[in-house]
Picture 1 (cartoon, rainbow, N blue to C red):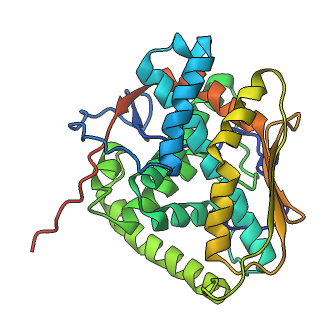
Picture 2: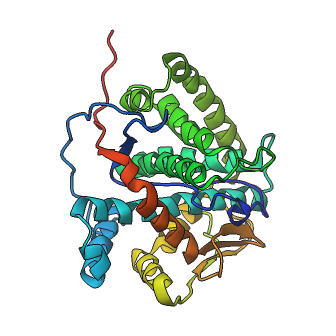
Length: 329
């Protein structure tokens, strides 16, 4: 989950489609440096997720959505799967980022850099610590989400705001990839090469990751929850939604997305005070941490769906090899 400051809100960003995650890595066909054209590596067989796991619930939700939505039924199976997972994965990363703001605020941690950069790095580090294939794919889709946001901004003539608190779309995409490569150069070597990250940058990413991970671990160590410490009270709520947003309200409630986050962060950290998390219809695209509350708008999920609908076809699906190569000695 991500860490950062209290009132730093993603809702204030001019680029509402912020992050991504899914089971497929989508790579561009000659339309930019990040997901550049490359020969697809051989697909690796996918193991079924453990029963009852979050990943297993994603599979069930996909099946349920297809059965209840004529519009989804008309989509090719591969695109339908990618769309659903893109939306769910993006919301996962957004939530983690905003929880990062909460960790910094509630634990009163010092931050020597930009708040939004710190939140991104906390989200990345948290996913890497989970260390599953699903969490890796969440990060891959996060980078893809930034890439699609960049495509959208260029297509609509949106000018970059260099004074904005958030980094540029492609910078944030490459930061995710860099931290993945830095954490495990062998495992993510193929990803770095597919996204055309230079060899010298791949090498320096290891130093960057080591520094980032040490910084966060040092700050968080005094606040890790001991087994004998009681867990904090976290109130969870899912608001109702109307019209096209109703499907998102139903989906995230059935996924038990907030419960999943609450279990993870309450198990890991010794929170000083109770707080709450909610998903609701807001009347605008956004997500934020304010006044001890994580707030995620269903409109953000709709925004991700539209982003993928409008620009996802510009990318080509590739499943990267998941095997970790052994170092030569």
